[in-house]
Image (cartoon, rainbow, N blue to C red; front, side):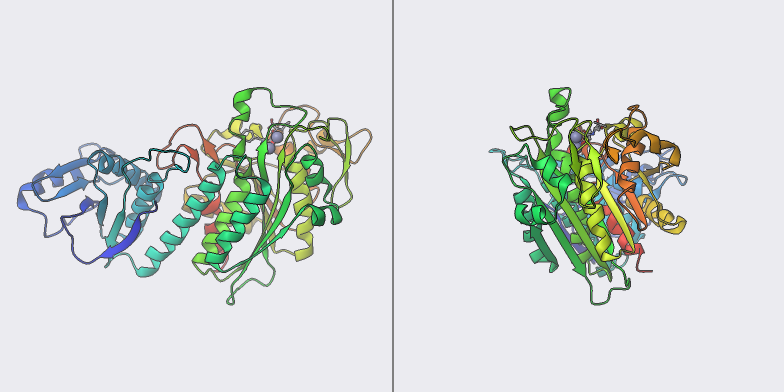
Length: 474
Ligand code: BES
Ligand code: ZN
Ligand code: ZN
């Protein structure tokens, strides 16, 4: 389902051509040239409509240039998605991109490929159209650029598949199995702790959330260490792996807030995806992924509001709402991360409805204690990847929200305001290293296709963290 990425020396009319800039290729017939030129120079700057021209032999799409003031790569990803709609309409399964700019070609190809994703495992009748092949100009896009984009796309689709997979299939054990399976292709290590090991480690957050479930929890440790790793201390990634979140005994208020909760392991998918991409593309780094996984369900043994539980590091938490379960499983993993003496820990989690209310589907909220340079690196990675981040504060004034009368902490704020920040403050308690938290509740799973993103799982976080890891080499 990922189109094959190739390079071409000479255009071939058997494949559609997307023209991103001039000079027009020499092979284009004279008859089509004036109209193509007009289309590439629209009257309004930033004109986004893509026109298709064809004679008996060629199918050519003219892609006008974006406004100079706009984010160029993002505009070309979006243009790729618009071109995809045209290709689909005319059932053109192969496409060549013509441009003198390699970055434009890669961004455009990314948009095309991203839009071609669909999750059809359980459909008897599959979509008959799929884009099979994208060719980029050999002169402008090096072999490296092509291979890297292929690796990244494979990882994004892997993350999307994990998130789209329903929770009756993708249990915690199954999630760990799929991560193990993927590691064989990427040649990195995966170790899975089962329930017995999690018990012996006294990971009370994971065990408590899991109490209402028939299915076992898992704790997956992924490790990719390049022989050429440039960082002495590992970068640790932590991903929330709640494979289904009913809310537990504090049941979610509406059924339609529950029907998308198979996506509550979007953080886990992003961590697994980013490490997969790093390994496929051979980044010279040492990175570790930690994925605490369970569902949050109701059963005779379920943990309940008012319970006091003891987490991995010994902190006692008064559970005031069983739906604030993500922070409990993450707390165990964040404490466990200390043993690696990490350079930095980044967690990704579909953690709060509050972050989604603040930013919609368009961005994730981030907060943390890493130094300014690292925070800037993360922001740069967000801008390069098109996965937007907005910085939230972690001021001490929010600490009071989490004070408990009878234990060390409560798991929800007293006021129900600033929910994304209060959740961040809760996590901060379990960190003693440079740390960043990314709340992806909004952009991880979307109700309708958006630009180059498909409906459902987006794989959000995979590209962002991959870019961040790539930047850490320099
Ligand atoms: N998994 C949810 C957060 C979520 C909401 C993710 C919407 C994606 C879309 C999380 O476990 C949760 O339920 N959080 C509660 C916390 C509250 C009880 C303090 C929330 O945000 O309502
Ligand atoms: Zn919840
Ligand atoms: Zn949750």
